[in-house]
Length: 250
Image 1 (cartoon, rainbow, N blue to C red):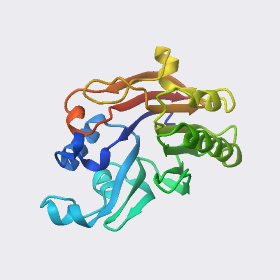
Image 2 (image 1 turned 60 degrees about the horizontal axis):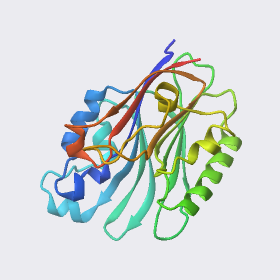
Image 3 (image 1 turned 90 degrees about the vertical axis):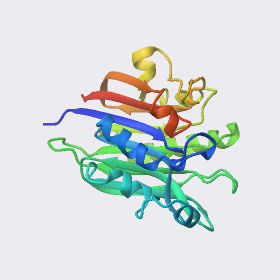
C-alpha cells in the first residue's frame, strides 16, 4: 500500500521569469522533475498562446501542462480560466497516479480576474477512497477572496466525503492570512506549514520571499516535512517560490 505522498504547488507565471524577461518553460520542466513529487498543483499554466508560438522558436508544440507532465506524470488535468484572443491559461494538476474524475469550476469575482477551482479525484493503489485534490488560484482583492472562499467551502462540503483524504493547494493571494479562518476552523483542514513551522510560508517574491501567498491544506494526513524552494534555480523561473510537503495517509 502506498501511504506516503510528496506533493508540491507552484505558480509558474505562464512559463516566464520575473517581469516576463525570459521564457523559462524548459528550465521549469527540468526543475519540476528534480523535485520528484507525486502530485503537482500548478497555477498560471498556458494552454495556448499564438503570440508566444510565433515569437519563440523553442516554444513547446503541446500545451504547457502536457509538456511539463511529459513521461514523468502519466495523468494530468487542466482547468481553463482566462480566455483571450491569443489563447488561454488556468490551473493544472500533474499526477503519477490515475486521475479518475475531474472538474473545473469558475469562481471569478468579476470580469477583470478569471479564477477557478480545479478538482480531481485520484486513485491511489490500496487506498479505500479516492484522493481529492483541489488546485486554486484566488483573486487579489479581499471582497472577491471572501466570496471565493465561501464557494470553496460549499464545494468541499458538497463534493468531498468527510472520510476521504483531501489536499487543497495553490496561490491564495492571501497576504492577510484570512483563509485559515474558514478552511481550518470550519472544514477541519490543516495548513502544512502552520503545522510544521507555526505559520504559513513566505512564498513571494521568489528571490527573497516576504509575502505569504501560497498554501497547502490537507485533511486525513500526517505532515512529515515541508519546504520552501527558493533561490536558484527557482528564483529565475517564476516570481513565486515552490512549496512542497511530504505526508503520510492516516
